[in-house]
Length: 260
Image (cartoon, rainbow, N blue to C red; front, side, top):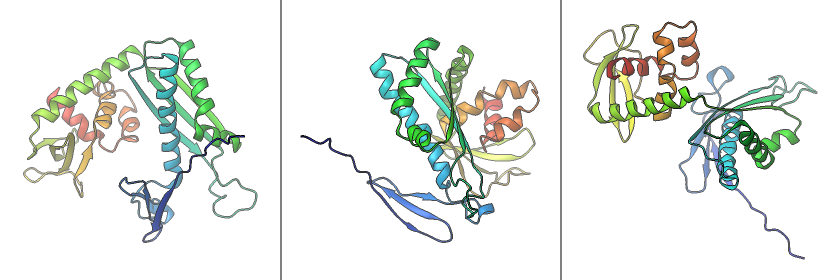
């Protein structure tokens, strides 16, 4: 009788200063696992449970790609966010308190022209086959998985954001130029290898308080751009909402103001 060949995955790493760990996988660059300062770490990287949420989200996206091909489901893009709720008393050693997530919410937004019925078939197949989704379910974690189709206006905003991003990458010099945020702080923006970078200003004051150069990715720019019109129209709470998800909000809004 022939046995199925099992796959074996492997990582290695080492403990660093404090709670920081450096982990290596295959021949990829090593990555840092840490805790925020409020939990005794040095905030050099996400913590293990944050990595898990990211892995769950990416695993869902990867399985979506596989299943979509099998089902002839056409889509242009996929965005996700995930959050997990746990009782911290568990890992502090309190008896009879679950140490891992009690519930996880996963939101998937698919850019597609397919209908809701096709999306539901895709969702069911993906969840049946996603290893990390099933790891949670088998552990008794309540998983709330919400899939939706991006509205046409959302897809239009993304295309507009991509076009503006490409313009910025072309027009902003690698040596940098200085711009001002809506709160009056100056900052330097430059380009390098397909990224935007922001840093404190050197020629104008008052300058932003950036302590080091910070990258802005294309996905971050497009995400913040989708909020711009609502912020411009002074919709209540929008600045706080988008700022809680992107630390580059003020700089991206300034870029849009200048180059749109």
